Structures are given as structure tokens and as C-alpha cells.
Amino acid sequence: MVTVNISAAGKPIALAPGLPIVVELPGKQLEDVTIADIKSAIAKRHPKFYVDRQKITLKDSRNLLADNVTLKDAGVADGGELSVKDLGAQVSWKTVFLIEYAGPLFIHPVIYYFPEIFYGGPVQHSMLQRYVLAFVMLHFAKRELETLFVHRFSHATMPFKNVFKNSAHYHLGSGLALAYSIYSPVYGATSPYIRGTVRNDSLYIQAGAAIWLFSEISNLITHITLRTLRPAGSRKRAIPQGYGFNLVSFPNYFFEFLGWLVIAALTGSYAAWIFLVLATSQMYIWAIKKHRAYRKEFGSEYPRDRKAMFPFLA
View 1: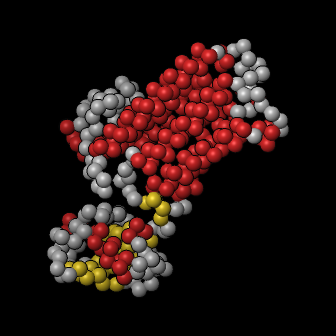
View 2: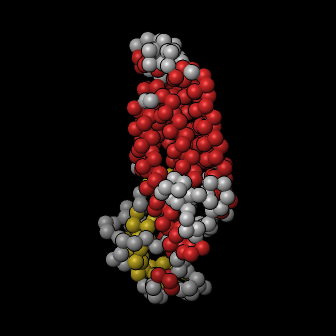
């Protein structure tokens, strides 16, 4: 049997008022007991303090111990001590994604179909506005379906309070700001910004639509490829290969960038360009971080000439 002393890291934990406690794991050795086992034992004693709320660390350390780490690997002896911190109320990543993408799906048609509320009068919509509405609605509908049927998440949950911060990027950026800008009379059919310009040329808009469709289909293909690399319920990682991945580590980010670039280029909207810059900057930061992690994990096996996000560039 293995015993471990569990104490609160920092202030007392309201959901686990009995801490410190001694956790007993009968019939196991140090090399058999994982951090996940410790979390389950704590949750058994304090059911409201469920495993996803718990952050387990070594005593006097802030570094999280992953669920699959054993006590032996962590350097914890029988009768040793671990600390636990309450991460707060948690929500699944799938739920977060669904909330994020639902915002633009609601905001865009409301502003498009009820211009009197937002602009004080009707708007005769241009072909460009109709195409942009279709782009946005199809893009985020695809995102919702991918969340439900394609994506596999390496982490089960995130703090509930982060939902509002994460959603703001989509609800305000690609939602409210973009919709209010593009569906305004400035982009209407009778506007001098549209009438008689390339922005009212069907060939120009359809060419952009073709590039947009290519980027969306390509993005979906790369997401399906990433799904096949991670068996359900695991955090296993492998070197991605195939469509797009032979050039960059994260072609899904590149194709996402390309799709929003089309909308910004077709409309010339400041809101579209600002969102493109912000979204691309964030994706590039993620790509660089994950690209370095790939190189560190796989070493010489990882393709040396593969860039992070932009083919042949970076």
C-alpha cells in the first residue's frame, strides 16, 4: 500500500475543508500510482472537488504534475507529500468552442437582416455583402461541426472564467465589429464605395470566393489529419504528414489566415484587416510554440526544412 500526504497549496480550499489528509492506495507500488490516481482519491473524499479542478504539484513547487506521471518518476516517496490547488469551476473545451463560434452565427444575420436597428434605416445589400454573410456563416457552421465531430482535445477542461475572454475574440472581433462594418450602407449596393468599382464585379468576387472555398476545404482536411494522429482519450503525439504538413507544421492555421485574408482583401474593411492581424498574430504565436515543441520532442526525426505556419517563410 502507498500513502501520500495531501495539503493545500496556499489558501485553504473551501471544497476540501479537511485538508491536509492522508491518501491511501492499497495494493499498489510507487511505480504504479499516477497523479491521476491521487486526484481520484482526493475527489472520492471530497466529491465537489472533482479531478478537473485539481492542480497537483510537489511540495513548495508551482510546476504542475501531469496526470500520467507516477509517484516514483515525480520523486515522491511512500508517506511523502504533495500539494493541491483549486483551479476553480471548469468547463469543457468543447463547450467553450461551441460558445465562441455561436456568437458570430447569431450576430451576423441579426445585423444583416435588421439594419434599421443598427443604421437607422434600410440597406440595399450589395453582392459583396451577400457573399461575406455566406462566408462567415459557412465558416462558423463548419467550426461548430468540427468541434462536435472532428476535434480531439489534449485537455478536457479550462477555467469557466476564461470563457468570456476567449469568446470576446470571436463575438467582438469577427462578430460585432466585422458585421457592423461590412453590412453598413457604406458597403451597400448604391454606395459609391461599391457601385461601379471592382467590389461590385462578379468575376472579382467569385475569384475571391474560389480562394476562400479552397482555404476552408483545406483547413478541414488538415483538421481531419490531426484527428487521426491522436487516438480517442489519449494525449499521444505523432509527426503529422500529408496535405499541407510537408510544408508547414500547422497548415490549419495558414488556411485559416488565407480565408480571412480573402474577406479583408475583398471588402477593404478596417475591421476585417484588424481582425486578420490580431487572429494571425495569435495563430503564429501558437504555431511557433508548438513547432518548437515538435522539434524538441521528435529531434532529428522531425523534417528540418518544415516551417511553422507560412510556407517557405516562417
